[in-house]
Amino acid sequence: MIAIVIHGGAGTINKAKMTPEKQKNYELALQKATEVGYDLLKMGQSALEAAEAAVRSMEDSPLFNAGHGSVFTHEGKHEMDAAIMCGKTLQAGAIASVQGIQNPICLSRAVLGHSNHILLCGTGAQAFAQTQGFELVADDFFDTDLRKRQLKRIQDSQKTQLDHSEEDTKFGTVGAVTLDQQGNLAAATSTGGMTNKRYMRIGDSPIIGVGTYANNATCAVSCTGHGETFMQYVAAYDLACLIAYKSLSLKEAGDYLVHQKLPKKSGGLIALNTKGEIALPFNTSGMYRAWMRSGEKLRLEIF
Ligand code: ASP
Image (cartoon, rainbow, N blue to C red; front, side, top):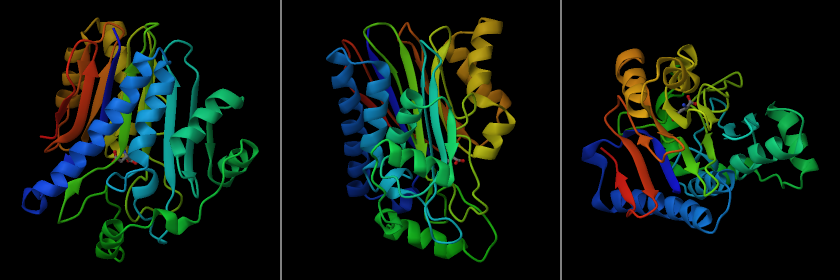
């Protein structure tokens, strides 16, 4: 059994603003990312490889709040967070508040594979990136008109927003969980964080056990939503604990965490276990998600 599940963020674009063309573009981007990861799994590549590739594909799309389409900080810059974890070894790599890295998920993978650390941030992560041959790109590489409008609207309001505005309520973080032919799990998450964030704010995504977690004994999980809330609930690890300590099924654990514990409208998650079972609970208006398992067709849902 091989499997991949991806998300392109909890929440949805306001129906009035969602044209069939926009919807199609989102669907194509989700389909592409799922297939990129699935094809690697089919070729016998590792769960880590597939999760990284799927997330990278979404980072390259301007539609999602990760990599190229990352939101603006209060100062009009882009600071990105990302993490990746191997369910077999519990090795993990993460970067936070990093500028100028085109594919933050690849830098996380480099932290996992080529450093003695798990979480690097800011200019330190940039310096490490350069030792690994990553090229820094100019900050305006990440500028997109949608994010510019979102920042303008709230710039003086002292608020931070989750890729969320009056015209859309979409949190655009991306993530993937994968199961490879060897029966190993991996999880990966990447985000530009919150529009108008300040003081090098870091969200849940790069925090192992909060926005991202993988352990073959329980599940692989990638979260999306209000980062501060997910930190308060230690969301990803809590899901694993519900399975390990309470013997809940993956679906029961996901439903309990997202619908009973987390506050309403705070977000959602994607999760996968070594049996190939999946859970995709969310308590927002929707969550961009797609999945594919051996012997099944690709499935894609937004609402
Ligand atoms: N969880 C992310 C953060 O708070 C945002 C998101 O999921 O869109 O940084």
